[in-house]
Image (cartoon, rainbow, N blue to C red; front, side):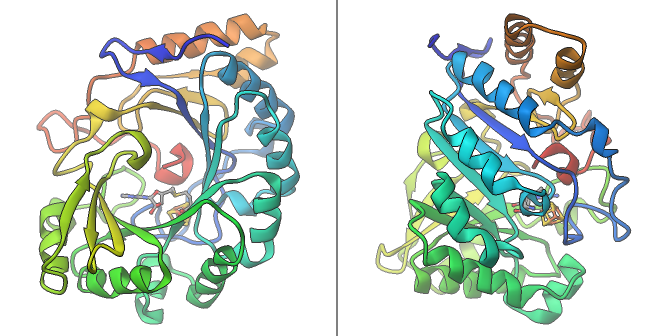
Length: 332
Ligand code: SAM
Ligand code: SF4
């Protein structure tokens, strides 16, 4: 196993986010338009065999953490047996998944058995009405049932993720924090980020992390920071609340960037490797594989993407323009 790849800004890149599909069973306002995004033809999506091969190449380059995401990963057929194989690749240290939990009741046990260690579950509201408005599907009950099912399995950790949009769910910040605290789950509040695919982003709809913290302080005056971004906490700053029993993070790409702690690259479901969610520039590992590339050729592409990682995204700066892909296509 080679030592981890290091980018030009001395960041060790050991984490790959893998989008296994661009399909989804929800239509979150902040992620895609109501009609959804044009889906990539199935022939363009990486097969499980291709993903397993890439898993072996990435681990040979010192990658240890892999997050399965999408779209909604659980809508992809036969995902659980694939993950069981992926988890067995030597060098896969952490296998984790992001999901909206709608299908989790059916799959929680299989995922835990397959070797998925941790889950991040999206939950932006506890109100049916807001769920239908924000997710554009009436699936709150199945989402909550999915969270409960996951809590019955031996996952090492389950985190809740809530994207907060002013005027939609910002008043629910304390209720969501209470929901997490009562269940012993860490919750992370995410600033609404711009992509060109949802037309709903506007600067004044972003609730800055600082304001989210104030909303929590009104209820828990003991809120205090316990961890800076990086390492286990990923891009969020972690704070404790509720007499130290609760953990809350804030992912604030817009108001407080965390790029200096970035340790990741992303693979889209059609096989493009990207160094940054918000910067142009990607290389197709799929085309390379389908044109007969050797593992060493694939490793060279991965090294070049790492070497070309930008120092920081440009959200909030005058020269920022959203890239032409939605989160469900990028593997947000
Ligand atoms: N479908 C799964 C889910 O929703 O958890 C996994 C894919 S989803 C694209 C991954 C994460 O991206 C979710 O936590 C979602 O809330 C977040 N996300 C999507 N669009 C976003 C946006 N415009 N701003 C901030 N976070 C966003
Ligand atoms: Fe689907 Fe996740 Fe995007 Fe919502 S955020 S539309 S659940 S991919």
